[in-house]
Length: 257
Image 1 (cartoon, rainbow, N blue to C red):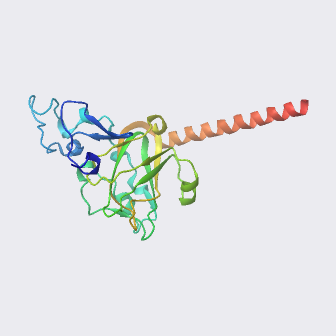
Image 2: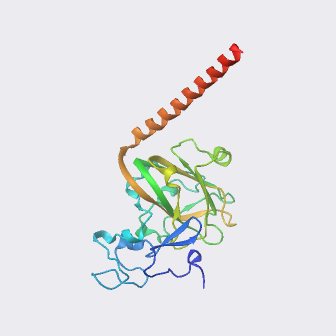
Image 3: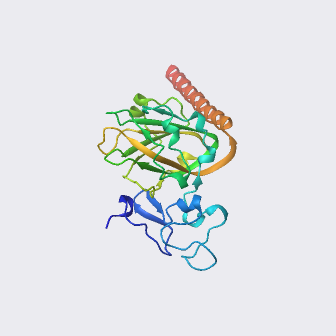
């Protein structure tokens, strides 16, 4: 019997709805598709006040009790400004940002250039968001991404920088062909962000990297993107000012001695 993160059956029951697969990885018990489609699932009832396993779905198929990592951030993504480096055809990168109900649709996909598995996906948001987790479905035959490095609030990430710079968080990925794995991120590091950049350096041995779905989950805020960017810039300038003042103090001490 395969474990859940390798395509095994989805676990069910009245225990905690978020099931730990391994450190840093969780799985929604209703496998998230009910969040968008409002039904189906994998053999348990979702209707009425009785039956099933103790929860019901409201309008729109929300699965809040089994979705501790938040909701889809798709409405807050500025799709027209999504960019991808090393995509085989222009526009492939934005095509994998779909509704959870469409995550098994493989007609839209992203694939890297042949014999080069690296990808950089830059995702700007229309408002500041709180990213809580992401889900990614990769291709078969070793083409699924095996690692990812995340950057926030940067528009200058290229392959040289992505390789050398320390990201906000790095994660190892599994070959998830059904989209049942949520990868939680460090909440404090992804609070009120204006953009997310994902660097994928390698896969599971394929000549190219293929991704058919990328879903981001969290919360949108009322803060406009420009305000957030100015806040981060002001903080950077303040740090620079403090560094300059500290250097001056050191110089003064040196002179006095």
